[in-house]
Image 1 (spheres, rainbow, N blue to C red):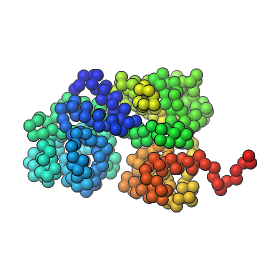
Image 2 (image 1 turned 180 degrees about the horizontal axis):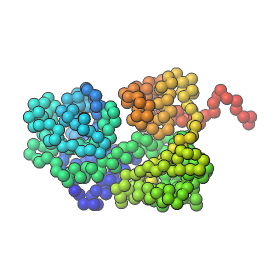
Image 3 (image 1 turned 120 degrees about the vertical axis):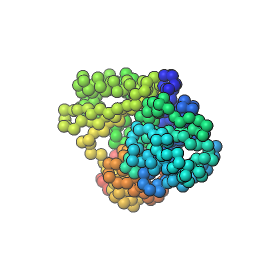
Image 4 (image 1 turned 180 degrees about the vertical axis):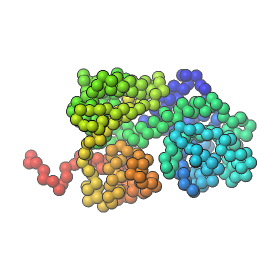
Length: 384
């Protein structure tokens, strides 16, 4: 395994990539170098028969056509993937040698037409996340004249996997937290999920409107002299520890991937849902911090469903998906929570984009947030 400094550099670069996706290439190249491998790739692939793959990030591939061919054709013929599916779980790592016998691989179309021309015969893959209909995996490869990956390679990948998962989740959930640059902070103000950015000492650097409402009630969480505090000494100690550890990782001096904390409150039997993750962003001038997501299970956010259906002709299902995107949920979270296939959720998003005249999820969310910020024309407005 690399020296501690090298490991910390990889962890830091993973979180840098969360707010600047162009850095995933650098992360993959450094990771491949650390394990003496080539062609590192992060991809999402369906777990149903014939499913295609989508490339999240890749490095060292001289021919983009190779990646396209994999996603569109060879993904469904990947004998390693077929063998791994029933064992594939979040955080688990698999060697190619353990998935099929050399003779099986050598006889496959996948090997003869796809791997062998690239001098690939060994692989190691780590499952970043697994959901019912898809999985996200980081893989690297070695050639015919190289040895299979060893236990040190496995140990490094196992250490990195939770950080890669967290970094990708931050990238997805906040649409890069640099969405403040694309949408402006005003857009974050209209999210129904509370968003707080805090220093290692739990000093609040930014809090959106939803978060400020929670803090102003001083029920479970509060702001005291600019510092985030929980209701009881025990909860406060746990919260401060999460924030400090996450900020240390954001600074590049730790390997803590973040965590969740239910914060009890006097007014309700249901606690606030608090999730803390590392954050490293150019907007912080190179400093690391913690990002704290706060959800109130008793909150009743204003529904955008009616406005989206009335103004743009969205179906109820399409409008519900758009609403949940505005709350910071990923497509996978929507799929899991609604017991709807990821394919169906993506179809709802595509139709919503078409009906609203937008081309990207970020534009759809910005449009919906604009509706949330606008007065309802069906309601009487106060005299000025």
